[in-house]
Length: 83
Image (tube, rainbow, N blue to C red; front, top):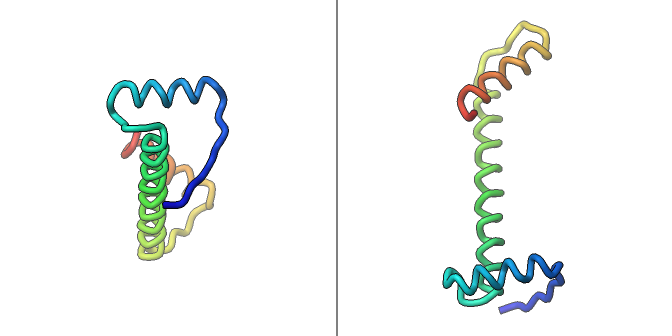
């Protein structure tokens, strides 16, 4: 396994140590690995969502309206669906 050394402020070090002490992780390294994995998963989900939106856009009919009105409708629809 590759090794990485990082420096963190004291408060973050204490936080990581507390997470380990709670028994959720076997070590601070285990905790950091989990955070990185979660970030990878989140990034992959964001890319998948973006690609889905691009595909939907390409498949949708052309709109003969002002771009700002179209963008406002898209944002409004997004807020309605996802809060």
